[in-house]
Amino acid sequence: MPVSVTSWDAVFKAPNSVIDDSEGHTLASISSLTPDIRAELSHGGNVSAATLVGRKLAEVCIQRNIEKVAFDRGGFLYHGRVQALADAAREAGLKF
Image (cartoon, helix red, strand yellow):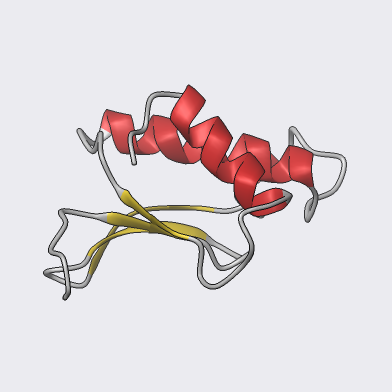
């Protein structure tokens, strides 16, 4: 049975987005290619990059008054980069 939520965090191992599922609108989006994140990384595609993306995504969401999301790991195992992104977002204050 489908559950309606205000927004959800989708993991694509590419740009990460918070989307309002009922409206289909992107509420927040960030990736390791975003200039301010890119400046802090030596290279992307690793656990440290996912951690930084998770932290920054949570900061953007909280600034936009989005405090709770449903986490969609996109079929990927909850391990490595996916886990790092989720853990960092939780530590930064995002609830899911």
